[in-house]
Length: 207
Image (cartoon, one colour):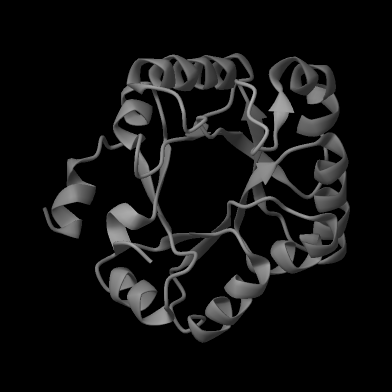
């Protein structure tokens, strides 16, 4: 299935994020020529040269999807349109403050862990509820949704249950977006209510 056929096969409410980490500028440019303008990066130092080399394509929207270290916040706020990986209220407040200083207004998502996973960061759902009023009222950022990653050892049915939890939690918080589902599990995520799926190797092939 070619790219345009695949993209057109997705439900109308599901947006495609092409995860371009580890991919050369030429491949990103080729995908942009087919109408794909949302790209995700997770390593700041790798991403910044790409942002510079591709600034002639005005339609591109850059999404930061990796763990955001406090000392990289300013570079991410300056260069990225959407941040999927806000994993603490402390980080949210830092992004808010620096966005104000840089006169930016990034869209952000709270990263939530619905299962124990030592390899992933994120809010516990109850802890996010505890700070939600503070989070949603921070200036200079627009909270649009939740992001989650399923642990690699879950089977398909277990992933569906996790993704459904994320969708219901987002609905409870009156958030439209759920960024969930990657190359191995995007079908389950779409079935359970994802609005963003993050695909890398599925689109670009192996790095």
